[in-house]
Length: 177
Image (cartoon, rainbow, N blue to C red; front, side):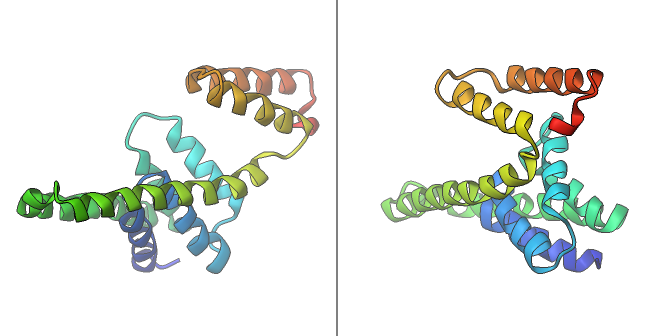
């Protein structure tokens, strides 16, 4: 894929959802559904790998760019991730007196609601591509209440699932994952 077109696609995602995880649904719609540049599995992998490393939430767009177009794609992803912040900081300085205005506050609340909806729209395709067998389905059913109901630290959940995966590999049971 052309790196400039990829930059525009990723910029659209980062601008419309502020480079957070809510932008995943925009990236998926553009690169998986419409342009067929990536598969759901590749997108899922890019997000998982970058979310397991320290750094900004939107860093996954660099990995997506790399998977779609190699090193030029990674540069396009990085540029798309940083451009909105570089543009919005001067604007915030210019318009900071309006940030407390009720209309602006209301608009920001609507953006939060829309971002939550985008995140929910992203969860289903990711879960569908991540759950590949009975063990991964059981892991998903166990981890969801652990995080939501019991507020278990996500790092512990990731560590637990890594141990399950390694155990399955050691027992030669990866076909059930």
